[in-house]
Image (tube, rainbow, N blue to C red; front, side, top):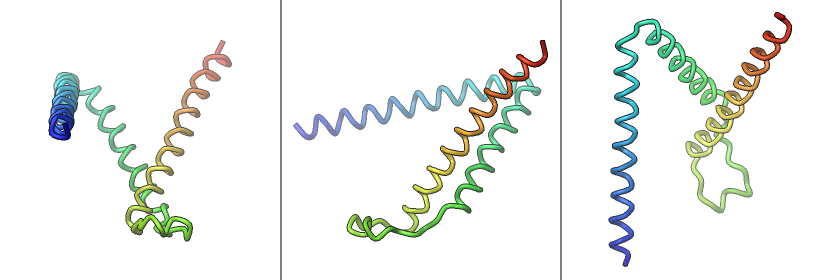
Length: 109
């Protein structure tokens, strides 16, 4: 029974990998066909990299005493902190962008 589960998991990983490669290839193909969009896409990717690096620098590698029993390493703690900081930062930026867009529409009329 366990071998069937393992085979199912492997097939799922293969399907997810194929879907991800397909989505990326369509995006790259579309980006190459239009240079204006390519510039915007690269700015977006650069922005995400900057937020990721900033989050990693800010994140603490301290392990709380209550979590020492789980044998969490300092690098794992730092990665989790980075993910949380990135999530909060990108959430605030997305909410700010929506508010700016809607408020600028409202006040321009």
